[in-house]
Amino acid sequence: MDWLQRGGASGTRPKQASQPPEAPPGIVRRKIRFEPASEAAREEWFVAGTEMSIIHAATGAALARIAYPADGSIIALDPDIPPERQRISLRLSGQAGHGWIWRLDDKPIGTSEHPRLWLPQPGKHRLSLTNRHGDVLDSVHFEVRALPSRAR
Image (cartoon, rainbow, N blue to C red):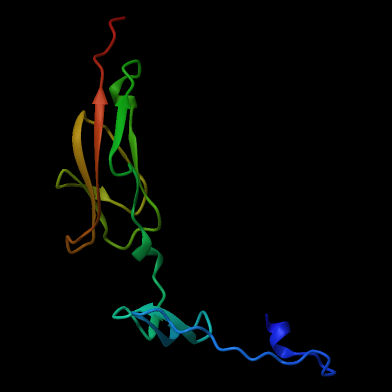
């Protein structure tokens, strides 16, 4: 399209001027910039009421969420493996923030700086990730099911 609009250098192709179409109702264009300046300032389109002029980069800790177990997971314990040898690895999708705590069924079970191996207990559970002030950053519900052990 740029080639068509520029026209021919020797005048063999006339320059074509065109105007962009009007924005749909409720869409606005605003100049934005990034902090830190990871990209050049530019104009962007926003739904009216959501526009912003400064885009702040998110930290890795701000993006970390519970990666495993996923919300709604059903985890089955193997009756052929001794219970004390079965563990569930509680993992985050990114690096944990300082002082973040794993809470299982509203009870603290340790810090989240490293993956945590939890001895699973049958039942329905709520796993939460909280900051050092106790604010919930993410939460998932999952269920652990177990069959009776086989007689040997």
